[in-house]
Image (cartoon, helix red, strand yellow):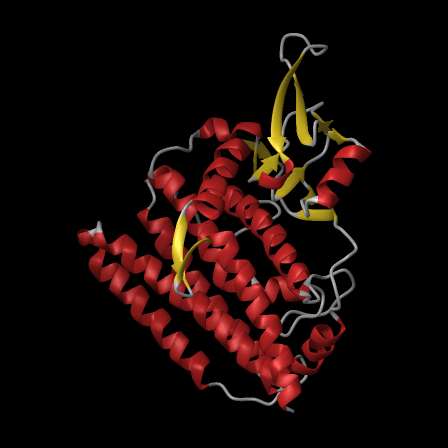
Length: 336
């Protein structure tokens, strides 16, 4: 369970080994509604601005391995409170550094970007099932993305930087075709002109951006637990304070946010009351964030999928994949 604190003046503290959330009443700010959550059932707490938590709540979160994430207005993590006992990660991070400079990094990047393209193709195929009148349009997009996937699979190099620009070009073209398709299936008043972020140029991208922000936090947590350095990437640059590996590893899982957001729009759950206009764009307001967070949590932490022979939530599947990645790095190092 993920707790999202989205009301101004909310206070998180502890009562009887449970998180107590005190939310001020609209009519009387001195009155509070109280909600209680067992710490062992909470996986993370998202904290935007204008909310507070006690040191007791932080200690309880550390005790039960609950991730506390501070997020900005767009849902992107800007900091987190995390326990210090992650175990030995030296071998994993050493192997990760070596992989970033050889063909192993090439293999992983091709796999992650390739899976992203496959997910895009499968999503378009799903959309096509209920839109027979758009078959020709969607078949054309599917074929073009499949060709890009083939081009990606044929790339060879000893180091990622040798083919990095080509990979970005193939990925960018695939993304443009994919988002053109998503826009095409939306009601006309919600159609958009490509991806945009900070600011989002339209409500659909505002929802996408916030959803990706939540996903970034989930990916970073999964990598940290697995012992992987979130700052040491293969394709994305290792700039100062840049979560390069998070941006690499997230690619196959962006489809989760895409599916949640498109379902909200095609299901006519979204209206003008969920976003606010800002300079040159749009942002989610409290109602919009609540709508998205509830749908996202259901999709990620309650609904299950078949993954590696077991029924898993999507969050658990991501964590399993992060551990597999870390273990593969170590096994590769031992063989060499």
